[in-house]
Length: 327
Image (tube, rainbow, N blue to C red; front, side):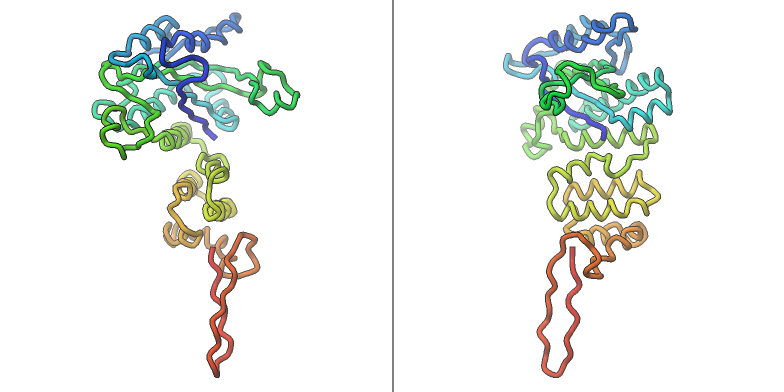
């Protein structure tokens, strides 16, 4: 699953200078001095020095108070499957450049997510990104807690990821943009000042963008929506998810219908699996018919079902069949 996260930042106070964070993100260049250094990049360049990053971010703070956030940290971390796909398609050196191009596109979506006049792409922002090749075990990792790994040890496997520092203000130094605003347009006055940012939608578009840009065929269990339902979904949503998972092998167009359906389930658009089938239509929903068949044949499905209800017999009539079971 593509992991895209926004934070105030955990390594430095973002109410002051960005210098501490910039210095922290230079750690790999210091640790691996025998290798070519990774330079900072953005939509217009690939070779920015740390002092240029710090100066640009720290000087773009007009009319921000001492307690206001001055910048934010965006973490873009492809999964092992996604990195393997990139390596097979572009090779080791090529995948680094492709991830940088992808980052520019992600920051385009970041800008558009604010839904602010004049903020249309990454060119309207002040931001700089750094590609990192390694990850290290921290005190919150399970392996450190159970003693199998030590804090600071390198994690195995391909750990390539991107860290982005983005200014709170746009490139004109006039418009405030906060991705921590969760009003999503409901508070009109607040959204006029901060923009209306939907963090869930931003994370989802990062996943969709990766699949489209790199031709990645994402399985159901590798979607953000699947993970969200498993962790926070209602019983009805989990039943719908089970139906989709069981029907996935019968679906021959995984990057369209299935992924759209699981996103709709995550949004709570269907009350039951039957409603889900009805909503997608007979043509698209054919593959689900087999999975929903147990709903109409009690005793076959292991999914939670409502108990049978019987109508009272009228005098002179035989016993009527029980109602069909519903999801």
